Image 1 (cartoon, rainbow, N blue to C red):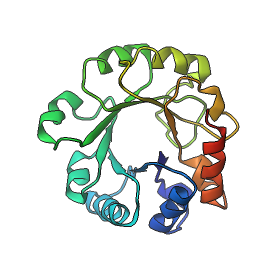
Image 2: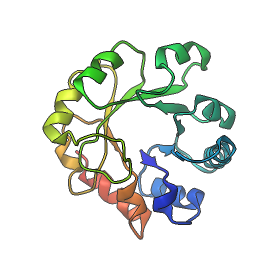
Image 3: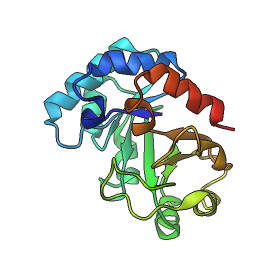
Length: 196
C-alpha cells in the first residue's frame, strides 16, 4: 500500500505519481491528506479511483471514501469506532485499523476489521504521533495477537532495506520510501522485491 503525502510529493501531480507506484507493483493506494479540506480529499480520491486499476482507500474519512466510490477507509484508534461504522457501509467496503501495541491489539480483536496496520515498525518522520518503533520482534509480537483470518501489514519507516525483516507481515504500507525516490515505480519495485 502506498500512502499519499503532499509534503513528500513536493508539488508533483499525485495521480501521475500514484500511477507510477502502481506500475511498480503497488496493490493499493491510501489517500492521506491530514490537513486538507474534505472537498480536496474527495477530489483526489475521486481522481485516483477513476485513474487506477488497484483499490483506493481513504484515511480516516468514511464519508469521503463513500462519496468517491473508494474501496474502503483506514481508521486510527481515535477515529469513529469501526464496529459502529460497519453496519453503515456497503458489503465489501474495506475497513482497516491501526494497531500500535498489545493493548490496542486487544481492543482491535473485538471489532470486524478487514486488515490491521501495525506500527510504527521503524522510526518514521512522516507521522509525528506514530509512537516508539516496534522493531521486527515487536511487530511480530503484535501481529501474532491478530485474528488468524485478518491480514496484518507493517507501517512506519519501512524501506527496501528493512521490509524483509517483517516476517509475519502480509504486506507493507509506505510513503517516504516511494515518494522520496526520484523514480516511484523503481522504488515500489524494490520494495516488492525485498518483501518476503
